Image (cartoon, rainbow, N blue to C red; front, side, top):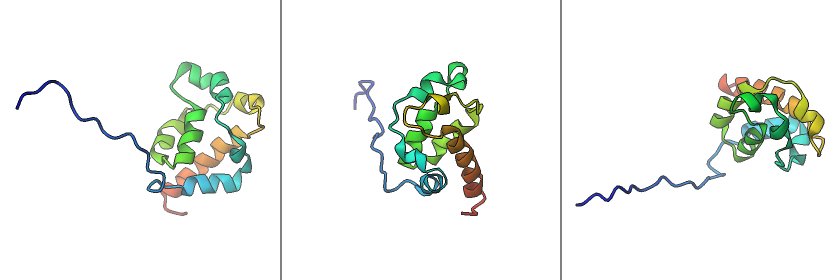
Amino acid sequence: MKSFGYTISKGRVIDYDANDHRLENLVLAAEPTLALCIACGCCAATCTAAQHTGFSLRRINVSLRRGETDIIRQEISGCMLCGKCTILCPRGVSTRNIVFTVRKHLSLLDNNAV
């Protein structure tokens, strides 16, 4: 069989039902303003950490809704907790508290306490 240099790509379908939504539910219970987020990107545009690293609070919010905790584990440590995103959010989402809550509940999930 001849090889033409093509390979079959991995599917990019996200199975929302198979993902773990415990973290999202815990964060929503602790910080209900997360439900107001429309992922507009204002938080990511003003983020000091994002200007110097690959950190994106918007990516964390989207991953949280998708139930992709592995991505959140990699990203969450990049936040410097400066609070610019909270000040600029047009919906009044307490993004800084969301980061605190995600960090807290991730450590609880890692220890299987929840």
